[in-house]
Image (cartoon, rainbow, N blue to C red):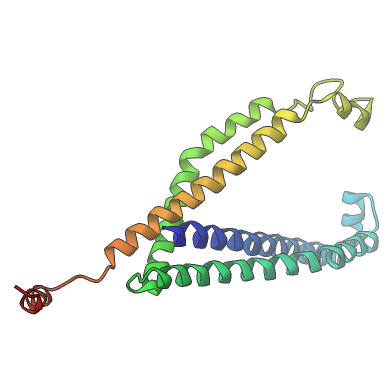
Length: 208
């Protein structure tokens, strides 16, 4: 169903855009808190370990937060908006096609699609690992040795970009397919069933 292909694609994209910045912010807050505690209690050890005064590192962390925090908040807001748009588009498409219980269909199909997405990710992870065969070996001499970053000019990144675009396209298609099948299944399972009483009444009302 179109509701699943459109709705689930938007909801999954919105969830990713909201969850990834939240995870990054959580890890950043945790590590910055740990470092601030270490710099306060053992400033000499921190200076010896990092080679920089704790005040310099704390200023760097503060500058990083002030730079990236607005972007993280913007991505979270965008993700929430996309998720809501996906949910509302699913309800609108289901209701426009007179599907029974559109809210129940959306939530139940969303749960099935999430589980199916996990299974597909587990199955496809070995296949996506094949892209590493075309990853440049930066540990070889001449890649990032004495020549520094200028050695990157000799590396062909076309296979990496091509495989990245291919896997992204495949992921979008599979995501839409999972949503389509999940929504179709739940719409079929929750469809309004006619009772024998309704059938007999329809038969009696029909002209001979």
